[in-house]
Image (cartoon, rainbow over all chains, first blue to last red; front, side, top):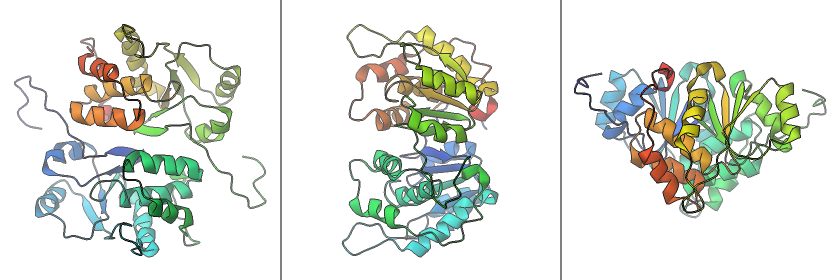
Amino acid sequence: GGSASQGEEEFLVPPDNFSMVDKGIYRSGFPKKKNFAFLKKLKLRTVICLVLEEYPEANLQYFKTIGVKLCQFGVVGNKEPFVDIPESVIRNALAVLLDPANHPVLIHCNKGKHRTGCLVGCLRKLQHWSLTAIFDEYRRFSFPKSRFMDQQFIELFNFSEDCSGIDDELR
Amino acid sequence: GGSASQGEEEFLVPPDNFSMVDKGIYRSGFPKKKNFAFLKKLKLRTVICLVLEEYPEANLQYFKTIGVKLCQFGVVGNKEPFVDIPESVIRNALAVLLDPANHPVLIHCNKGKHRTGCLVGCLRKLQHWSLTAIFDEYRRFSFPKSRFMDQQFIELFNFSEDCSGIDDELR
């Protein structure tokens, strides 16, 4: 809201690499102050953050204002050799992501490329997308820094047997 | 449905360049037979097709089966010099796209890059996205064949004054 009565259009600035993933699920890079007005329009209930670092105070404050619950599942990227994303953390993030009670939900990491791409890739596996289509989507967002290791992580990812809680809407 | 009782998972194959654009709005390249099972899950009501050529009989048949209305707004791409996308056609396509009675709707052309990118870009303008964010999205799908002319089309596109019919959900 506010003083838009001068007839001036206020532009909305989505976070870098923003996109809708599925009903009630969005993805992006790290949201900054200039993205807040845009985020408000999404009526988010939850933010899933995949970075390890402490969350910026300005974001915490704003999320509090608009009633967003922050769920941080810190992982390091698949960047260094032998540094793997732990499957258990992604499994926990998936549990939050798949619960319709948490929707609309925004997934983000720093660039919205790699860690976010891994989590979305695991969701697509659960939705039975072909690997070709999953990797195509992964690369669309991670270009030109697509990682072999991330795609391998998605391919080999093991769901716990019990993903029965998945909302029918997402199947 | 069918005989999935052998415990075999059937993979779903989204059309090339498939993505969710917004609530009730999807985009992709030209849907082929191998994508039909995936499309069925979207419970589409409408398909907006932006190519000039006659629609394939197999698709027409399938859309009929699943109750999809086809709206064809044929345009030639911005490929040749001096061949412009006519604004009026995009305006008509927008009217169909913005009407919630037509949702869920799939927009497609051949590759899901240029003509689809132009229509989605115009939608984003209507949603007050910054041009930077609009072009970023356009290029994500058109890479490595992004066109100056398409981005200029989006920038200069003139809505008829009356886009008041736009669903509040999409604003």
